[in-house]
Image (cartoon, rainbow, N blue to C red; front, side, top):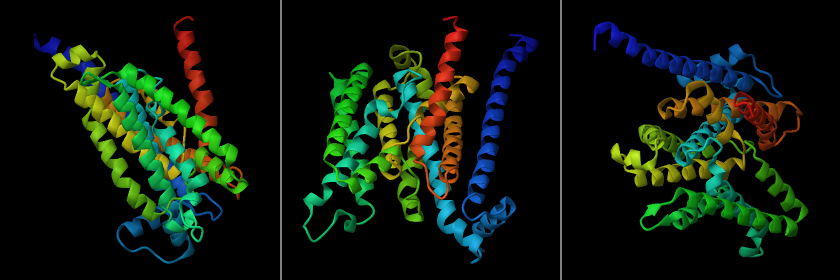
Length: 362
């Protein structure tokens, strides 16, 4: 190939890299701006400049004891950081599910993680006190009982779906998908029965948990969930080349040297880990894992090397803004975060579907 021809061949690749860098940079800048906005907003208003000053002071170990510093350190910073983790983790889990099932409409709920976590949490809320001595309430066992139960429920359901979908030594994705749909139906039925027998107090807790919230954010919660979610995101990024090959079909991916079965197992496990850990602490937050990867795919294309980090940034941005709206729109009350994400994500995703239909002339 001549030098001019080689230069022309590399131009589209350079343009794609520039486009990906521009998208990632834009998302990163928007995420920083949204985080500063969220840190400054609330019942106690803090100027954005003061937010930046206080954060930089804490970063070098010189945090103050004034009211603004205490509010940021004890209340707002853990909540915003949990929002960042939640958005990034759910969006990456959604991108993994969509890449695994080769379906842009897939999301983590398809393999039953959210349903399993919700059912386990509902069992603890409604029936937990029946399993401990009368002199002790389940709340007295500590703040981690509900998250641990939800996390275990999500992983147990995922293991069941994987077991059903595995046949003759290989994982059948259609069979796993059908198993996930069946498990979701069973879990929703179980939650419905528990709602029917719940007391008024239990019903309020159950309803609010199922609608999602970041109100439980604190530094201990972050220390527990951050390693799991960050490890899942890092491992998902390492799977990007294999997911690109898998998009060509399992047979072609095998010919390209991809260990397809290991990739499928890893993708399901990482989706369960990230979603289960987050749902256990925040409740069920819908549409983030569906909308964020789909939106990024429209801009960046299907290359998972770009799609996964861009989806993490877009998901984090979405949840930070949604949580900001949840705690300020009807202040001093607080809207459930899952309601806000559904109100924002549902119409947006419907508009995307109508756009696709119009583009295709349907």
